[in-house]
Image (cartoon, rainbow, N blue to C red; front, side, top):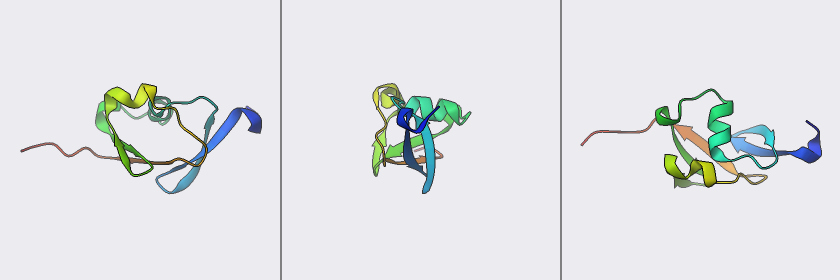
Length: 72
């Protein structure tokens, strides 16, 4: 993969390289994380699991993965 075919996002505050055209779902899968085991935010905005496949990552995006909070 050459630099022209990649983007760099900030993953939990650190640079992370992904293929150009990657979605948030692609990133979660590339990290080997179970989709239901993490919650996600891009640029400080929560992204629901059902929307990750349609959320195209952009160069410089700030991505956070965190443990979802459940309960009442």
